[in-house]
Image (cartoon, rainbow over all chains, first blue to last red; front, side, top):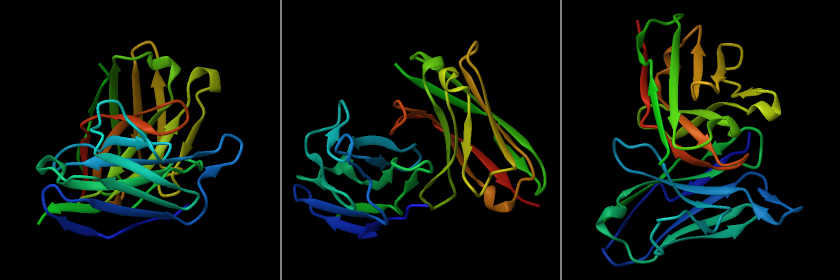
Length: 113
Length: 120
């Protein structure tokens, strides 16, 4: 199975500051035929299911604030929260859906400094 | 609005069985692949399995950790998907989520989950 490795495990950021989360896949998730990266990002708050934020590595889901952005290609990806808000405190997961077995990263916990 | 509602969770002894159900609404259920994803306490999500739509012969795939023990099925007439779990192990303890897949790609909607606890 493809291993998704996230870093850091946790980070504390001041309100209004930038938060950056990294995700690395053990194999490329870029499909050359359509030039799409099969990578999604999810946000999970306590007691709730994961919520889709980003798909195709950089496409924001409808209703997701534009302070959330995704970038990267191949094996290295980044989720950026440009100006952290109190409601962004959560655990963030990356996930690849390129291969038959979808796999998730271990998660990055974002807190307020 | 899409709604996915799981039921059937509970406590069971190792070696026992449970059947989870998921009732879907708000989209054309029969068109879509459906998945189950679980999350053990304090851990990240883990994919369990998927069932394809009628156009793809309702075929299934499973994670290696559950293959041979878990079986997915669906009933398009009632917009429901099921997860039959046999030979349960303590490591199967988790919240089980019913998840809608966008096409054959990412997971766009998740249910609230149902807790399965396997313990003696």
